[in-house]
Length: 273
Image 1: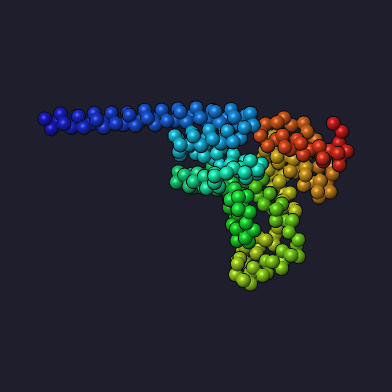
Image 2: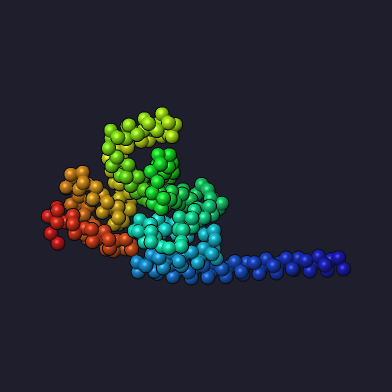
């Protein structure tokens, strides 16, 4: 009798395991369908539709690491294109943070988590628009850690280039006065002050060149490199990059905007169609 009961318990355990496996497999299959819908929407430049599909997939396959990174990347791209700025009743910054928490729980040291962590801090910066000096240096450290840990990531290099470009526009003399005041008031540490004082156009260009080298088919990096080269008076480099943008096919929902912005620079550089 005891043996029969033991066998029944074993059979019940196997049955429960099979049901769990079938349920999980079914959810992952359904999630894959949503991912396919999202990928198709993204290919047709419908970023918001793609985001909704990826979110539906994550409701079914919550710890899908590549999908979590893809979704956070898309949220960042939508923020940069202003498509999320006017979304009422949706706090996509908080949604991105919840996805970061999932990645941290799965594997806090993976390259996907490091990239996503840097992207999230950029999302937070864009949604809050804080110029708090401590947040500025924390953002730098998070992105720089991504660059150092994931050497092949064009995204991390691009984010660091943009950080430098934002900060380098501060007048040098004003920056020195501001940094000294923050140090005196204990708003920042001496280590923070070093970050502020080493901001330069050369650093911005270094990481912008790196992002383009790592992702030569990314129109955004090519356009930004041409745009910054033009502003710095390097017309030869500006022409080279903007001509490249002109010849590149549209692959991303933000690419049409780069194509539209190109016309102004072509006129100023006397680039013929």
